[in-house]
Image 1 (tube, one colour):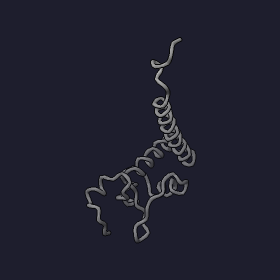
Image 2: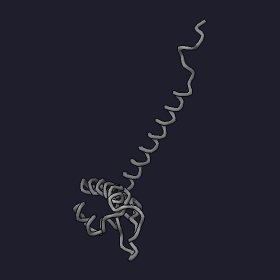
Image 3: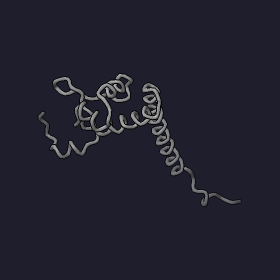
Image 4: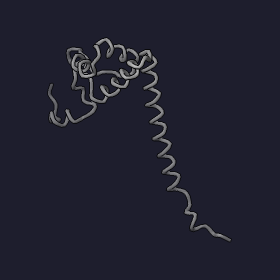
Length: 117
């Protein structure tokens, strides 16, 4: 693997696919089959090495850990994946709404400068 980015920078990157499937499964205390299942459910899409092996980032491992937590509580894997996707969509919608509110507040006329007559 050759790149212009120093190794330290890549390892600090949450999106850098640093972990093999076996290592990721070990870190999560689960099986490679679980990682394949959440991939098939399109919760995460691991990058592939030149040899075609799945590689996972720290960000993807956090998502997989959340899925495992739900599955361990008895939620079917497909439902767990859908819950996480919906949670992510809700968080993004809330972030967008907060930004719109911030812009609207900045664009609103200052109430203290209104004529009180």
